[in-house]
Image 1 (cartoon, chains in turn blue, brown, purple):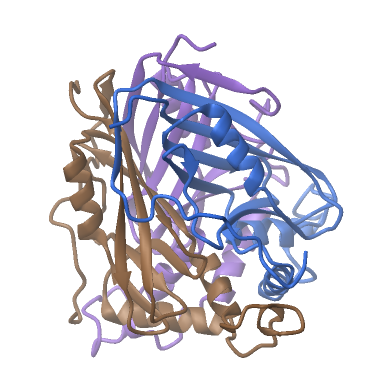
Image 2 (spheres, rainbow over the protein chains, first blue to last red; image 1 turned 180 degrees about the horizontal axis):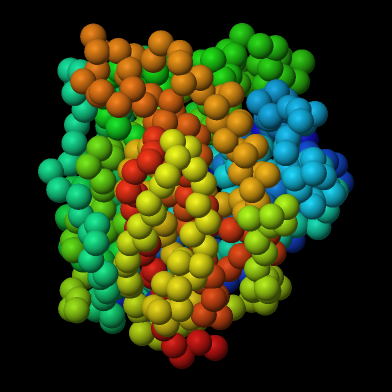
Length: 171
Length: 171
Length: 171
């Protein structure tokens, strides 16, 4: 990644009122897997979300994104290496890894990963994101990208996607 | 706005179990535009969300709210001038505008807005909110209002709304 | 609660692509009530969410969770006494209860609960969570539990649930 950010070619559905009634209701789920290399690492999964939206053939609807892990977050922001470094820095300053968290204390916890900071950082970013589908496309502003955050890597992570919408006969 | 907060006349669907089966499925999208005047500014958009819910004629369902911008957030809280000042103060103290963020450094970023703080503050508030519709009304507690937060204004901002639900034949 | 955490017996829908088309669309809402005893208190409501999912008979879909209060949050994390103490500690350190918040100042606010901190802490955790249903079950990773956070108790609190999905004829 360079100094620039990934952008979306077109902003969808910015001004139009759209509607669909009583077409075929479609629900489609899938899982995106991310193999992380660092303890804290952001990954842009937008293209994979778009691929599922298109494969679903849903014209108007929503898509739910759900992290399958407590220490793995999903959120939206710009996809730029510099900003991602800033996000990592903010998380590290907001939640001190080395504080005497009870979750890391064998007298109070049977967790041996010593990852209280990862739980708390993921909680601040969030584990659930709901986006919209309109005109058959994922609704995104110009600089908006869907990001996942590894907070306790490296690990293999899963993000579940569920599309729900109407497939055709829009008006 | 005075010392008082906007409240909702009735809390909806607090106790009843509601259901709808196989009525006409309706999806309706629309965009709310907000012209902001300050760099950081909260706006109550509840009435505009309610208007779309009513126009959709959906009786049972959900409504997804999506900020079309990385530095513009949507969330729920009380609508009171004093509390909004507190929210602004908290955001300013949690994310220092003048830290040496890489996103503001021309050696690492081609963004000339110097708005790293706005990206980080919006991330903490969130860009997506999903509410419920029951009995034809937006489900809200007594003091709950839908707020949007400008973090890098003044600008023209868009919030996309997508209703999905069943229009009639409830039981 | 011991040192251990509640876990889910099986992770659902981790790898399979699932879909449903044009079955009976079902929407079902219900309210979970939580009586809190402390000013700040986390409660695991996962089993009650699962009960509604099963009662709805929805096979593929989503479930929206919505806090009916400004000072009561809903989010996902591990259910362990030690970690919950860490979450409480983080919230207390991020938002100082005794700062001179305007919401607590009778010159600017008619709120007599002096609960600005509760508003701000709930805002950081969030009031809305959307989960998925697949194969008739709530989609959750191994350690994932649905938690609600009382931030201004003790009080009686409500969490509203709305299921939307397809009840049968999956393929």
